[in-house]
Length: 286
Image (cartoon, rainbow, N blue to C red; front, top):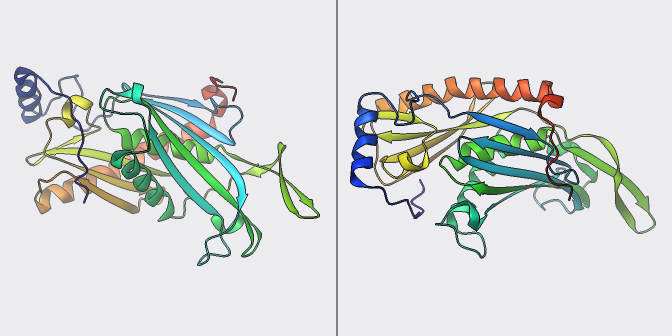
């Protein structure tokens, strides 16, 4: 469970009351149903010099994920596997609550959720990224940048990361007298993916579940639950945030909701990846 402090937006009492009344009626102040996601927009490979990248807009929340592959050493306890590293940065312009400087607890928490959600179901085939066992492997860097914060950072970051990884290409490799050198002018093939993974984040007020909470709703809801789901319909990660608990029945409803919405998001990922040309729009050249 996470109890990471956050600087929540200060809402007028009338707005808070309207949000609560709407939720109790089974409605949302933006017109959505309790289990509806906000509009989702995707741009594939907006960063041309990255191995893979994507931009995801979830309502007003905007996240860019960039993937880069470099050569490095494997972990001592996993000499026959490549390395996956996930980092998250909250750009100060994304929200008045974000400050310049090193990553804070909130960005570290997001990176850990994404990392665990990818690592547990072995989303990336790390065992195929070995150049020399125990000596040289590919290190996959997944860098997440939050550029606009309007709620539910986790799901937008997970979607952006999965798309960036699934579209990433492994650069060329040149054997030299002293070892190996990366040749970024060539590509040897796609980054091998075992399974697609998504997260479904839900806010909870009493016994009511709210999917994809907006920033205003996050300031009102009691607690939050993020559940990671893969293509096989397996739950591969759970993260609770907030001090208030909830009943077993609410938890069971949240799990069923995550499995159902997770299937929808996985299907959307497949659609995007099967039709990449429809989502290409270079935004950054370097």
